[in-house]
Image (cartoon, rainbow, N blue to C red):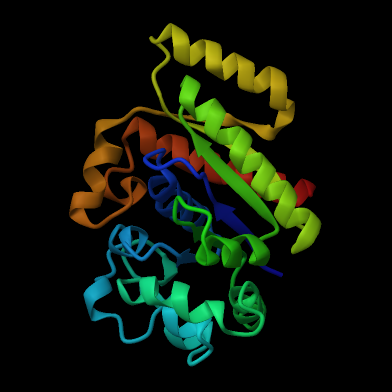
Length: 256
């Protein structure tokens, strides 16, 4: 049975897509069968996995409108070792079209259930806003991975996200929980980041992942080559950290 996780944070620019593509590549590297679902109309996770969003025959848009299955729409990101259910600008239209449809927040859940036996992990890259697309992701998931920078404003945004997850848990998806908080773009030389990191550990305890993703130039360069950092430069500090994070995720899932 596939474990389904949303990578979500209502604050933009916190490294959600970087986390999604590199975790997918890290999990694939340690032998897991992975599907990466791009739920953002910008299609950055699609492009960052080496898949051209402009040439997609079928996309997550078709899956949400139930005109294609996950098996039909998913494509292999061959250099990366995982599958991608890609997105492009078409997806922004789905937001409006879904409003009038039945089961509008459970379309993705139903589609992923049909492909359950094909994957060990499904990772969903959510857009930063709380939209119909994000709700589809949260309703389909077993848990949420929250990438966050150790900065003051990030703590404020985290409160909003926790409240959203509680509401979805209470009203739509009783399985949904926060799996963990991932500290990203971390610079240990900054006193403020160390302080916020300690506050997170005090408040959330073992919900904070042990792995910390450092601020890393090679990770930042990788998307311009259409690859996750883990594939682009496996020897970089950030890439090694994501492989370590993938191993920690597998351990958490086994303990669930």
